[in-house]
Image (cartoon, rainbow, N blue to C red):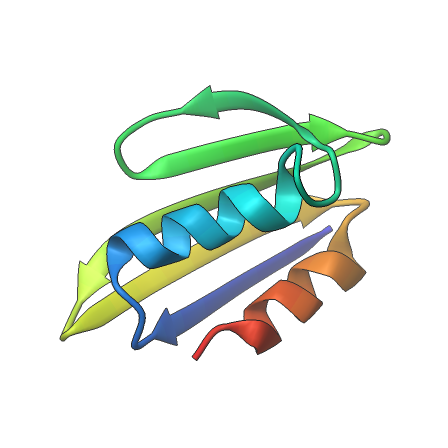
Length: 81
């Protein structure tokens, strides 16, 4: 299990779209189980990825909690600017 926080210069919408593209159908193929205005939860492969987002000082802060997808979460976080 992993929990990471990252502040990105990308907009809220851009980070949201990248999360969906990376972990959802077009990426790793995890199923989007829950989506609210500020939170996404993907499930699959015996684990999950939950991302909470909020606007923060001209960018976006993203908090991700994951089980079984640690490598992919680290890779995703490192791709954000």
